[in-house]
Length: 388
View 1 (tube, rainbow, N blue to C red):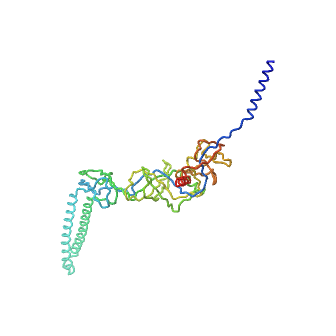
View 2: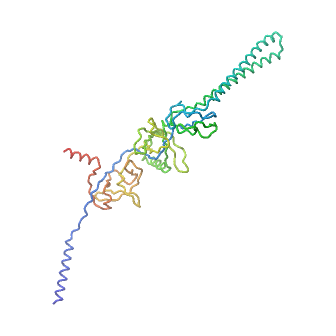
């Protein structure tokens, strides 16, 4: 009897548990709120960024062309000087004396020439009258010619002495920034010295020198071949300069030089742009960021960087399929455009990708799209609500 009651109770319990299982309702996961972007193609400027350095467009070493004692440093070291500004004076006394000595030599030779001319003038009529020998006539004529040559030589020595005296006054041949003097007043200056007196750097215009790697050159060539990139005619590139504090330099540079060979040590090509520098903001040796523009990317697809996830299999984005569920799409990344990635392959016009909320979803997660507060449409909607 007792055993029968136990069996009946156990049977009843099994029936109840089975009924409960049948009554369980499968709970659907709640859609995750995300922001999304519908892919559109557009033409965007192609930009290349590189670290660069400012160089003088014309560097002039100031050297003395005569030997002597440095008498005066006539400029303020480090100042900007104009062409013709006095920089140095070499002791002029020996050179003034040399000029005076050369003048005296000219006068002496001119006196000798005068005597030779008078002698010839006396001998010539006598020779015609056969009152003087041919030898006396030829000697008088030769002496006159020799004296004329001596006068010319003396005048050349005088010119040389005057030129050397002028070399004692050293002026800047260009407008530019000066460096410190490598010699102090009283130092003996040698013409053959390897160290210049100072250096004047032309900085308006200035040069921006930077490099491009072999890999970047190959990628550019590939993009051109695939018609993903259109280069400007006649290399009409513009170079924008970003300073160390993040500010944009107001002038734009133009391409000036491209090296035809790679540097074997770095595997890069040397590039150089020339840029106006009227306010002398740019100084030689200053590091800047060069942003080269002028090329175009037609039919480009860009996505925000935060929408892209990196994995061992490669970069991917989450797309929203027709069932409003997240799916994985692997993409081929190109270069950057502002704050976006350029997508070379993997997406097409009309695809919808997840931008914000990718950390809360995985493949197959149902999603619901909410407005992006940072988008222009959302800002306009908020403004309209505020106005109302």
